[in-house]
Length: 388
Ligand SMILES: Cc1cc2nc3c(=O)[nH]c(=O)nc-3n(C[C@H](O)[C@H](O)[C@H](O)COP(=O)(O)OP(=O)(O)OC[C@H]3O[C@@H](n4cnc5c(N)ncnc54)[C@H](O)[C@@H]3O)c2cc1C
Image 1: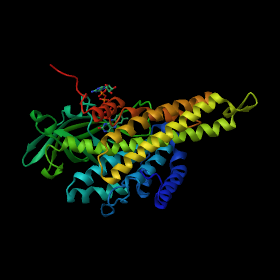
Image 2: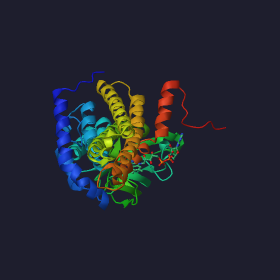
Image 3: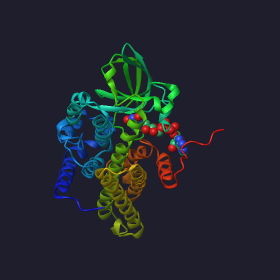
Image 4: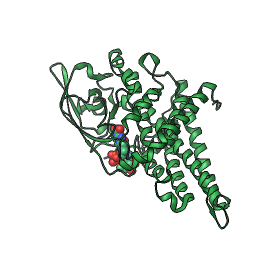
């Protein structure tokens, strides 16, 4: 694996760092306090080309490789995970999925608007009774008059209240199990598409999260993404990219923790010396540095495999598992370095901890990542307990 970045990658990384420091960091605390989704800033992410970076230029993207996409996500993630969520959902779950599975008409209809930030998209897989076991989803798609009628409930959908288009996963034939699943492109202006904001989240307060009710939504036959029965494959391929993006964002959180902790500990004095002079404080920081670097390397490896077109599901799960758990540990340690000051939002570290916490849950919990990694190592699928 070549660890050197090209001049272009460095330039894009520097630009993303400057953009984050100028536009994202100054707004993060207020948006978090107000639990307000910043649509204007999401638009700026689009203007920068950060909402469809790996999408081909002919569809409005920047045609960047995955390693470079990861560098952008890392920077935005350092600034604000709520905004990083916009980048991850829009780019990996929505645009990447339409580009890979969509018809030419679907790509032309949605990708330029999504990549520019003119429109937002959401990815509606999870349901009230179907989370880790995604194939058990109950939203039903039935054929009617040459088209489709979709009814069901979706839960925890990022950007669900603000999106113009939703990728909705539904069951076309319950007897077929996961082979009956299909993905539909649903304009959120459709009759029967209702959303409700989910309040009271521990973190990601400035990220929009919705419960969605789909009430007999009528769609034309060509609203399907891919073929009937492709739904599970569509979802898994989207998550392969989404998990990479979440992991890259978590490297950003780890980096932010190191930066904030170094700055604070070299400034704050106790017993007549900066607290950075104490070996026990240095241990906290050293552990953060090691976790950040290890997470970054694992993300880089997953990105390099994606760029080479090689299988990378296990490596992506390793990166996601390690980086998300590292972000939680780094944020917790960073609060410790800050003492009481770390417990309030004058410093970013308490928000880092609250925001990092969800990353070990969504796009496959840490337990699910371990099962994917274990399956890769042993060849045995332990996802389902043995049933008589
Ligand atoms: C803020 C937020 C944003 C989200 N955004 C989206 C989105 O945009 N789109 C979307 O579709 N979903 C989204 N989700 C949903 C998220 O992906 C799910 O919460 C996640 O997949 C876990 O599902 P669950 O919450 O139903 O937990 P469950 O699946 O009920 O899991 C509960 C516990 O059981 C464990 N468990 C489950 N199965 C196994 C097993 N086989 N072996 C061992 N342990 C197991 C889990 O690890 C966990 O500890 C979001 C969630 C949150 C909180």
